[in-house]
Image (cartoon, rainbow, N blue to C red; front, side, top):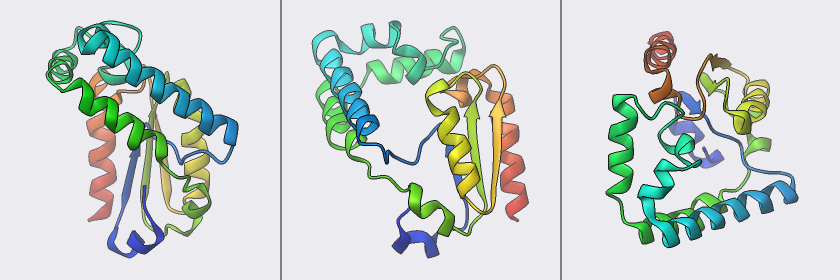
Length: 166
């Protein structure tokens, strides 16, 4: 997200399938536990099984037959397991909450989420409500990987937002 110190360097935000962090300690602990489970799974079983399993929808989307999803899966399988596990543990799990800072971000913001991205629908509502200049877009038929699952609709929404900035 965006720190207060960096807000003067930002002219707009596009928040896609994301959240503002956790104010609730139990939710934060749940996220940290999920990150650890994912890292351990990768270390034990590798990327091929990860992408082919239930977790695949969070990294290549719910439509693995799409060419973009196939390319994403190939790129994921080519990564280093230890590096991604370390990233998860040291970066993904440690993000501080910015929810209390959202109302001070006075820039245009696109909050975009897939209608089937159950984990981030509520976060999108919260961010859109708190950001003073936000536009929320929910993409029908898409899950967490909206840019792959509904590529044309995603591109149109992002391009429309960017056109409004010029």
